[in-house]
Each structure stands twice: as C-alpha cells, then as structure tokens.
Length: 190
Image (cartoon, rainbow, N blue to C red; front, top):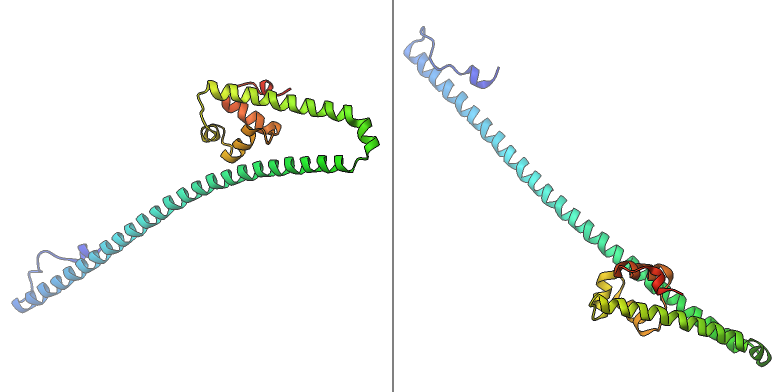
C-alpha cells in the first residue's frame, strides 16, 4: 500500500478536539514526508536524465571520432602504399643501373641490342599510359593534380610523380585511375 493510501482525508469521528489536532499534525507530517520523497525521486530522475544526455553526447562524439579515425587511417594506408610503390620503383631503377655498371664491356656489347629493346618497350608503355592519362584528364576538365587526387583518392604528390613521368604506376594504381576516369584499364596499358 502506498503512502497516499495511508493518508486519511477525514479524521475519525470518535476523536476529541486535541486528538484531532494531533491527527492533523500527523497527516501534515506524512504529507510533508511524501512530498520530500517525491522531490527526491524527481531529483534522481533529473540526474538520470542528465547522465543519459551526457552519455549520449559522449557516444555521438566517440562515433564521430572513430569515423574520422577510420578516414585518416584509410588515407594514411593509401599514402603508405603509394610511397611503398615509389620506393620499390626507385630501388628497382637503382638495381638496374647498378647491375648495368657491374656488367663488363664484352657483356654490354652482347646485351646492347636487348637492353635497348627493353628500354624502348618500357618507354613506349610509359608514353601510352601518359597519353591516355592526359587525354582523360583533359576530357574530364581536370586542370591540376589536386583535382585528380580528389577524384582518384590517390595522394597529390604521387599524382605529380606520375604526371611528370618520373614514376610509372603499378597495375592496381592504373586500374584505380582508369576506374575514376570512367575508362577501360586497357587504354592505359600496352
């Protein structure tokens, strides 16, 4: 039975006037106690509401932060992949040039025509890629490397390396560029 049911609105009829005053005082104390209890419940509810609101705010902030972190991690991973490709290309170029230095004069004469053919094929492949790249870049109205970087999701510095011809990208990068340009990857390859 709740406190409300314990209150009586009308005093019993068999009480003396002094007992009625005591009864009224007891009823007032019960009412005051119930009001205090209700106020405490209300304050607890307000505190719970405040705590829930703070937790929801923290949750929203955490979700946003995680989303921002995922984007940053993705960008870092892509940039690292591009740097790794560039390092491999530079090291490959160094190994090729170092091997060429170590080959003796007689071997160089024997391999001269073969190396020239490989160099010609590489250069032709690089030129085909650059022609297709520049053609699509122009068709799409892209005027600088930042616009290409934004469209392809590839780091602008790496785009600069590609555009200058200092680096010929690997197949997956060529495919990514072709996809972003809405082109068939074979148009960029020999």
